[in-house]
Structure formats: C-alpha cells, structure tokens
View 1 (tube, rainbow, N blue to C red):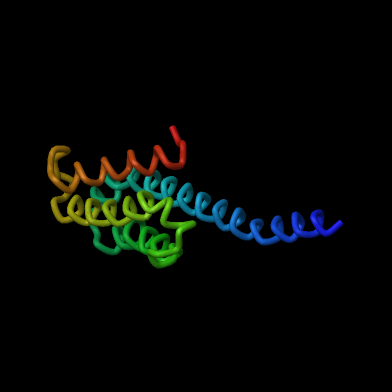
View 2 (cartoon, rainbow, N blue to C red):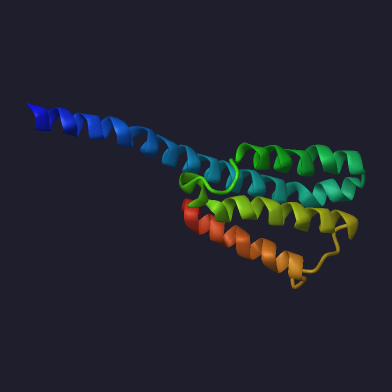
Amino acid sequence: MMLKRSGIFALLLILPILASADEAQGLARQSFSLVKERDAVLMQVIAAGTAKDYRHNIHQPIIQMVRKWPRFGDQRYDAFSPCRIMLDSFRHYSDAQFKAKGHLTADSPLAKVYHSDLRSCQAMVGEA
C-alpha cells in the first residue's frame, strides 16, 4: 500500500512539469503561427506605407507574443528557445524591411538569420 501511495505522490509531482512542457510547446506553436501570419502580410503592410499600420499589424503583435514568454532560465520554456529567438529575429527583419520599403534582399544578413531561426522553430514545433 505504501508503494502505491508513493507512486501516486510521484505522479502528482510530475504532472505540473508535464503540463508546463505542454504550455511551453503551445506557446512555441503560437509564436511560429503568429510569425508565419505576420510574414504573409508584411509586404502588404509595407505597401500601405504608414508607420501606424506597420506598428499595429506587425510590430505590436510580435511584442505582445514576446511578453508571453518567461525570462530565460525556465528549463521547460528554454527547450523551445529557438521559437522565442525567432520572434526577435522576425522583429528585426520586419523593421528593416519596413525601413527599406520592402527592398531588403533575401541574402541580407537579417533575412538569413530570420529564415534560419524560422526553420529552427519550425523543426521544434513540427509544423509544415
């Protein structure tokens, strides 16, 4: 009977860790989806040409997602850090694209870093 109780106790201790890992993976997936969505409309927003549209449609949603991530050091979330880093690289890439009026080349350092980070996150969350 004591062995059964200790097994249940161990299970109760591990459940919050498993739930947090699911939350971390969910946040990583949300981050990936948001970046894909915002990247898909980036050139349209740039074509509109207003800084207000850019901030509202691209910059602010990315910043809001970044704020959902806990600080580095939480192992459950750190396992998905490529997706957090992808948010930051997209922010820099999209800012540069907006300033360049959409003429930032695919071989620019910012574009290369962003696309590399995007692929890393994609591999982590298993999205196609």
